[in-house]
Length: 102
Image 1: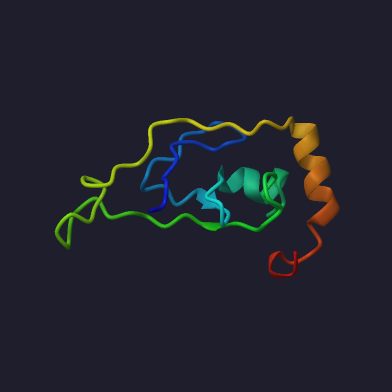
Image 2: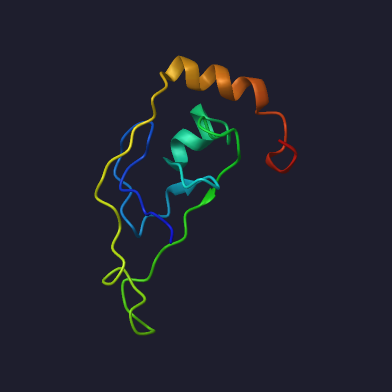
């Protein structure tokens, strides 16, 4: 099940479960749209993959047991271990390669 992290791993801004500003890679690394588009340039600094908008889990159980009420978002904040300089350098090396070809 998707781990809905509460913050951007880079700038630490809040990304509540209903946020349309949350982006994830295939490993569920979570970053805000601003960091993804400006600092990271659509390159996940942890795996090198691209990003996609994080799905929004419904708050209402339209089917029994399937909603935020039953599977709440995480409250554990996550932060990248890399400095902004390291993030930019990593992104610079592969940003021009399309995510599907990395």
